[in-house]
Length: 421
Image 1 (cartoon, one colour):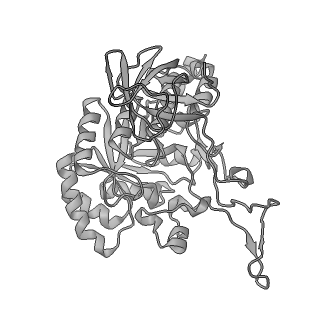
Image 2 (cartoon, rainbow, N blue to C red):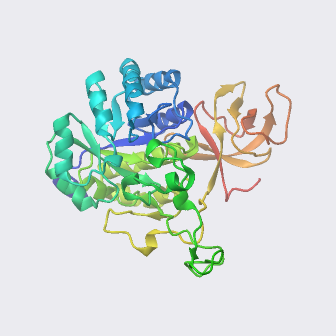
Image 3 (cartoon, rainbow, N blue to C red):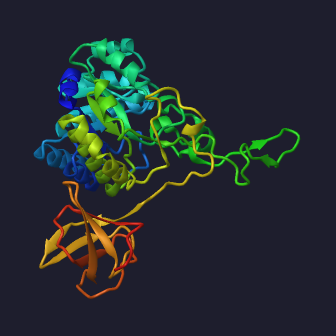
């Protein structure tokens, strides 16, 4: 019966699109299941505080991704000012030589320059362009866009209507997981107003996560909590989007590319999200029954990513008061990122550690195929192969002897519920 339903629905395999803020994270996304990655260069990207890619790193990233059959999309989605346009022309000439698969653009002026300088590279219209109806999609298609990203404020029903009313060869991309912006499709003025750092030019300070209170005009300096909480309230603090329990509905909507937010996230976050959604999509395309049989694993695994509590955003209707977090702005973190195995030699694994751990700890080897192998840290050595009991310095070169030898590229993590042996 389930197979008959799948055939009737005529599901097609969507692209799984992962973020990467550095070359290390790009490789993790590729290794753990991405069909495509999106990255930002050192200019014109809406994540100015991310590490981002130098020209050399972008060339290396494109080469690595393409060698593994994975596409690379480059963001150039700021809302440009006059002074940006000449530099944009130079930057697009540079991208022409690097040869990514697509450029993500929101500004019409930037679009025109990109179309003229490198017409052979696909253009994807960013969610920043507020793409809320099929007329807008048709407009961008007529300008030469290959794809447009839906606004966050659309339901799955609206996205299905868009897909049914645009040319067959125009692609629709929608977010499936990650942080939600309080402002319409990310066009926010709070950061610029409070700090002079423009969110629409890549420098957002995330004031939607700050603590707020009400002040009465005749009582300056007296702050009244909006909620009954002595610490104030976080009235703009949206829950994160998570659609791992709703893959059939996403497939029904006909979306061509599932986008995960997070170009400032760690390799652990990106790898966990990539592996989880890769499994979810593949199982669902196999059969809905297979997918539902693995839902507990999918929910457990996606919770290993840092998150702010989950919601389904606008996909099943307008969010209500339950879509916000009022008591804090902190992340939930159920796993700690230890590092990526950079080399395996003489029975030891080398990492550049991200967080402190010790000899005797039980950690996990996170495999690309979905397995998590719990192992004890038997011995630990510094860069000179001197024995150490712990690695307290971020970025420190460490050689590990584990109960089971990992492979190069494996990610090491420790769960909060794993104890010392």
